[in-house]
Length: 169
Image (cartoon, rainbow, N blue to C red; front, side):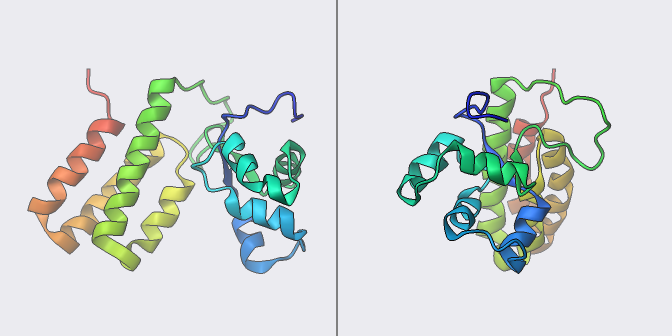
């Protein structure tokens, strides 16, 4: 990936190796690169992240370096564990928007109703790379929410999220 092929609206997320590097510091990344790795959150675009890290003297090459080391990957091109070796289909803008809104709604529900008890779900949410992953996570979120807040409170939350994830025709 070169600076000319990198899209400024692309969103990167940490890989398992990137998360492990933040915990274990095995690669002894320079402080500016480590700071950049921390800023990569699966929510901000390349342009947003670079705008916030300009003071550290970082540019597209720093993101390329992290990607080349396998510490980050483009969020919407990362395959799930169940994915085959086929190339991911191009996602429409509408599908990406639904994914981002559903991801935010799940995050809000976990934070609001589960707190620290939802840590495992939040980690799975961060790894979710597409609507299918979110749908798989939704089942576990639903059962956990029902246990915590009851069926009456959980049903509208889960229904709202599901309406974004599943398109009925």
